[in-house]
Image (cartoon, rainbow, N blue to C red; front, side, top):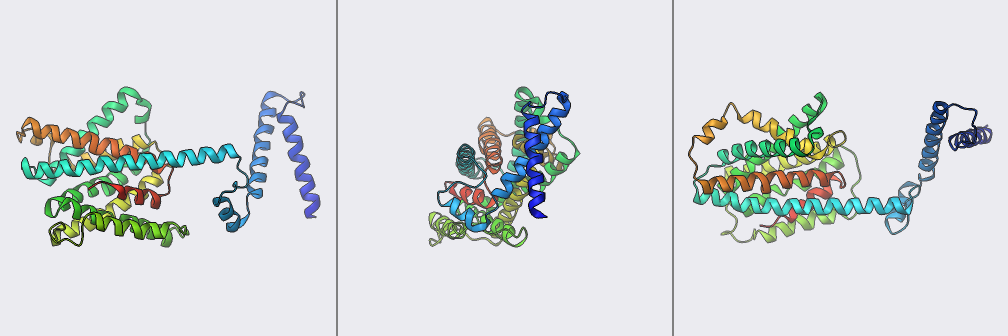
Length: 334
């Protein structure tokens, strides 16, 4: 019975393929297109079945062989996209590291409080994103209700919470301490993937997580009391930043299934800005009378420290698993 079914299925596939290639001129163009589509589906199923070799086959492919069902060209494209994602995430970390230093200078030399910086950052980032996208690619600003909901979740639960707690941690402790606490996020992402999504972590990921955390601790000189300032509220803010960053990574990755990266960043910051409007209206920020050099710092943080890195990071998430992207984010300079 199984042999007869396979022969019938193979004959049906051959007939559809011949129809698609134009060997049945009696059919109309629409009928030929339908047959072509069905033949393509059959080919996809056959490639999928051919590629079902179990985990051992996938491990052999990872060791240098070719993944079953994929051509060498497709493998090169996948590898190229993976490296593109790595470059994007690393570029984002460099921008974030620069932003942390500028923020500390604003706190120390200009008397700016963390709350005002978070609010101004959200307002300026929103204006920049909508201005640039509206001028260059206005189609990227078209969204539906599903996209708005996803943007609100990412913007409020991820961006707003992460930004506020991060600057609070810097203000109450130090840049090094805040970074050390925030970069526990990869552990949280890995635990979520393992326990909630029930996905197996690669054998290389677990050592990478351990080495990343240890390396981050050594870079910020956790062994030197003068380098790591411990403050209960600051530590709690830093740990909250780790949870918010992990939430941001996971929800952003989910939203990228139906949204463009820059669209998600723009509407995410719009959602964050709308939350701040009743609390700290824009006109109140303008009336605060900040000097020009302070506004230069605000603009630097809003563009090079916000728009560029968050856009790069979310774009990189399209090509990398969340756990791997979160580990790469730990390369942020201190």
